[in-house]
Length: 177
Image (cartoon, rainbow, N blue to C red; front, side, top):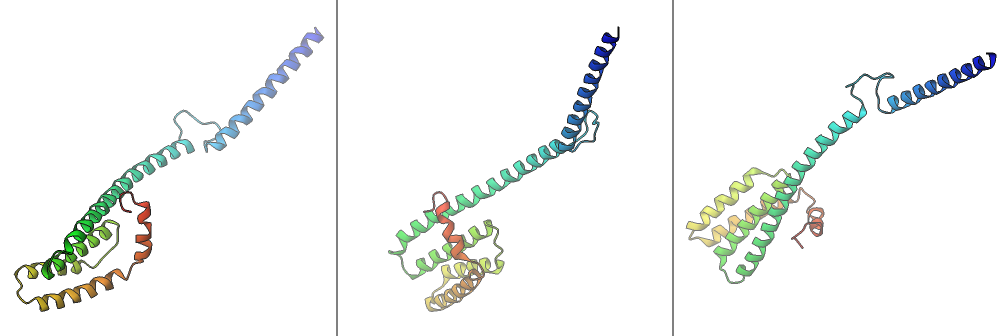
């Protein structure tokens, strides 16, 4: 009987030791998941917070990828426009050359605006105004003078930004080599 009693006591101690070890493991897991020591069903821990963060990050990345896709398509269209204009500029007169240059200026401003660069909105209005004057103008020296002033204004606006760094990234942009 004593032997059976000791065997049962040893067995009971082993079960108690295993239960304590299980509780310690549960406490370590609860601490790692940032849950209370004895979590109830449905309590939020770090995993739920991480899942929410991942969902927000996925939404942000989707929106950003759409924006980047818009920028890349605008750059590709700008490149195609420049190639087409380059072919045409050799055979055009002064009026057409100025009109082509104004188109390039406007497209450049549009691409920079898509990229998030804040530019002087008056510059776009000046381009449109000069383009309107160009259609009905008979005095080409006055138009060329106005175009030179607009060129200076345009260059001053673009000097505010590190264009070398922007253009150096063109190798990373598909379709713009």
